[in-house]
Length: 33
Length: 508
Image (cartoon, rainbow over all chains, first blue to last red; front, side, top):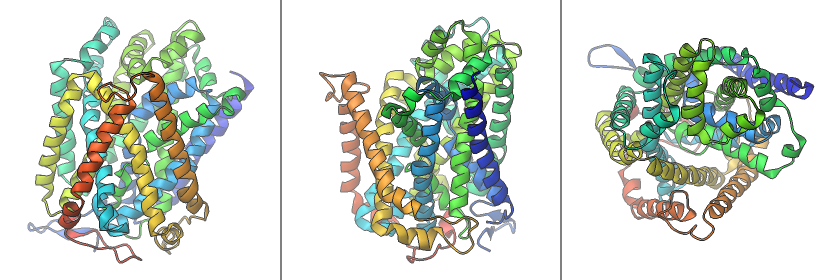
């Protein structure tokens, strides 16, 4: 894999999966809403 | 309490979504369908990999998420399905616009259930004998046209969908999604881990993630990414609007919708990790892999992946997991699509049971031709893909007519929120979404003309512009003619213009 591919993979995975995890964690602080 | 009601037996039954977790999983399940699994990976491979993925992420934030936020407001504020939501939000004469969204969803449910029947048939073959000695080209041709087993499994899949929906939200849809959506994630993770550890898989990841400059600045890459996001997340379909009817008044609109959008993209990315490495690890050349990706959604999944699985270590189990995951993805979307047709009938005073049986019958009659003929199914997929874009524009219109910034300040940014939305949303809803969706619609119109340069107007061709114009016109004319009748049939009005009412009794 090229450096271009590796860097983009890290960026995209961080944004998409990291973003989802961050939003879910924020929401789960108050499961009643 | 808003959330519970007493039954005659003295038991407490849930009204609407019981938990936020259940709502979040159901929203992700609504968006994450087969398109995430079979369309995203091949579109990424064909449109410059990382360049496409970047454009797809931008489309999510500036188009899909703003519209699903708007839908959540429409449904929760009015506590009605699509027709009633449009009636109470912008006026009686616009009821038909909401009905157009519901009708589109019912049309999609009809043919989408036929696709579920194919997937179920493949899952059964994967589980019983595997694809080792199967000619997948021949099997695909047999399954998609003139196959009684497909018809039977179509009826089974529609019955499963209707049965779950008939149980209501808290006791049916939410319970099932609480199990099905996490299972979908787990199955895809296992399949992805297996596929990325295959020899040669890195080439697939390179194709998925490496940015190619010539694609990054190509308008076609951006239009393809926008199409993928619009047809995957589902902005303007009425799905989120329908689930919103059953959400708590204090639930955070913005945060829930960001989770839905990003959750949908997470599923697609997982599928990318599974599908592209599997393809690139199995073929000798890049050109051969590209040829597979260009073979269409159905060709990729039902011909090539089914052929590839037996050749990989653990392929028998992976094949089962893949098709079960695909079926779960489809079912979690089908549930809310059918509900989008049922909720307006309940607004008109029908019982859930009567509304479900009616919609089951409508989808059965409308979907049988698709279960029998790939040509009919392809035509319906093309027509409703285009009319969905019209539904997105109708949603923008409803928000604009009410006052976009008024919606943002009064109905989205409520004091109980954990996330607040800035003016960027107003700009997206008033300018970005209408312009980009109109351009996308025009781009597909131009493409369809290029498919039939001399006969694009012919309404009897599978993918012609003429067939879209004819079918959409019939839908709109009928709905406009019955606008007053539909508007008058919706019994209650709950929206006071400023606050979210509780979940009404008829949707208990």
